[in-house]
Amino acid sequence: MDSIDRLLTEHEALRRDAAALEALLGPQRGVGWDDESDCDVAAFRAARDRLAHDLMEHEAREEKLIGRRLHSPGQGEMEAEVERAHKTLNSLVSLLQSAAELCTQKRVHRLRTIVSRVREELETHLGYEEKVLFPLLRGSSLV
Image (cartoon, rainbow, N blue to C red):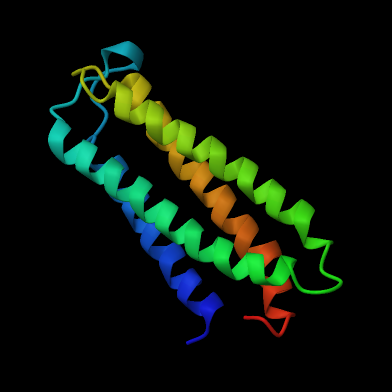
């Protein structure tokens, strides 16, 4: 298994972690602000922390791989692609922090909305890497 294949395996684990985070909120009960949950706050926080930790560890491994590529001769075209990936990652990290701050209330409308956005942002970030960055990396001899 090469480096990209390992990263793709980690992408699937991150997707499962995000789905598990959403599942911890339970089914929607009520509409809008009346949506309440008997969510286990400690389990939710632990799952959120695990997702944030695993995401940052994963990104560190990607940075190491991408850094080798960026510092090789004639590879400047990749800098813009890496910058775009960083923007989506920063948005995702902000959303995860917001989720951490909101998981203290029984009413979960805002939290459910943020967790849904986390999944969307994560998918955008991972999809971009899979469709744009990883093919560029596979094209190099540095993978």
